[in-house]
Image 1: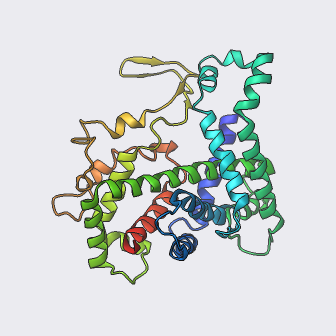
Image 2: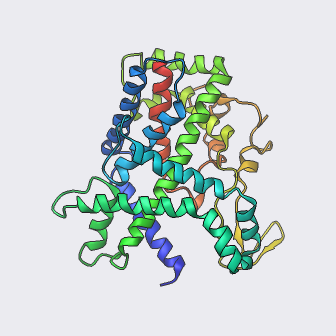
Image 3: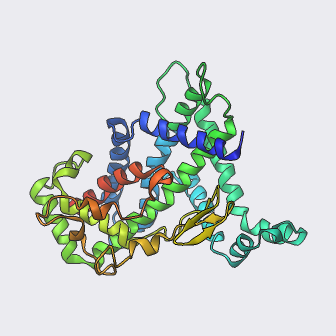
Length: 351
């Protein structure tokens, strides 16, 4: 089977599981609300509220959501060293992608097949990556060990095993290491991006206190301070969701997307893109395109609302590229939006 066909099969299975497993349904929402509420309880329990390592806490809150979905288990706030070992290795892996050595090898891949490169460069570049893969396999195995074919799957690993092992399954050719890879991709894509996005949201709220107050007033007048915020509140919090859209555009945390291989000769704006070329969409330019977003460097949540101040400006929303577009749109798009819609309004409501 061609590598492209194998990739497509894994992506189809991933999307099927995420959809069938509960994307946008009560099971998925319940997992997120549980993790969010545990984070709130932990924040409330802190004695020194003037010195809070908020990024550290957000990291675990998002991590627990993804852990629960992927593996079926979570960490406590006083027993999460294994989790932070994983995220530290993940951070090292991401940082290695910004080094000049990595960029150089992307431009001149033939230099990778060199004794000194393999011995002295690869070891440094991929040390964190190897550690992350190793820890990921351990987590997947822990979830495999708890799999019961007679029970309904409640996490991604169990659902993947069930799909692959079913009689006449069209995914029967997939092996254990394919499940490792699928979970790895979900975790890498979901953990760092969602954590960074929420940190940006908090920074933006601090930077624009009048906008923060407007978000709070909407939540206060519609939901109140005692009611638990759920996904069903999205339709009655238009300005809050406009803030989420604008903050996603403004933060622009993924300015350049991972490369995709061009599978045939094609032409864009008169420029030939040969078969085999690696294409990397420039989302930064799209999200700050002044022909689409008026005053793109100004933070204006209201741009995502029509004149009535309540209806989503869908035409503008469809031109935002924070999660990609088309067949290669982020597989965790719905998951990420659910996290943002449950966590951000609750933080404003409570604090």
